[in-house]
Length: 129
Image 1 (cartoon, rainbow, N blue to C red):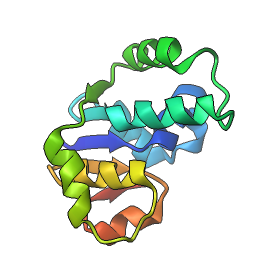
Image 2 (cartoon, rainbow, N blue to C red):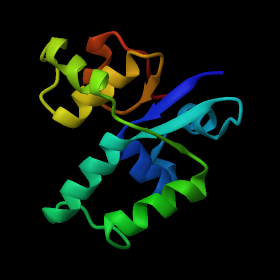
Image 3 (cartoon, rainbow, N blue to C red):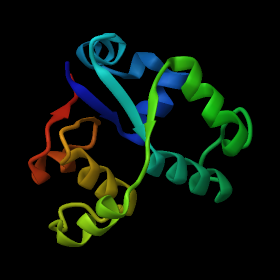
Image 4 (tube, rainbow, N blue to C red):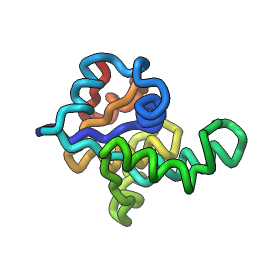
């Protein structure tokens, strides 16, 4: 079993345009033997981007996203105090605060499914193939 943590763009593509996800990544996400999760930080990022007008969704993030994620069978993981504080010790390979928090969470045994090459600089496992 592999523990997969989806980056925000991967979640959005899984919900609206799954063809953008490479075949091997899509197979891993669909594999029932894998644990596949979405971080609460992803919900936060989506809500902020929608409120700024940078992201169009079928409805308000707070009402649409939980149901959309539930339909896919994905799990949510919460942001812990330890996750938030771990960001302080991360090198500045990435300036995006949402991605930095995903890296902190991934260090607990998650493989990040992302197109963003900057994640690999942190030494966390990345899947994008």
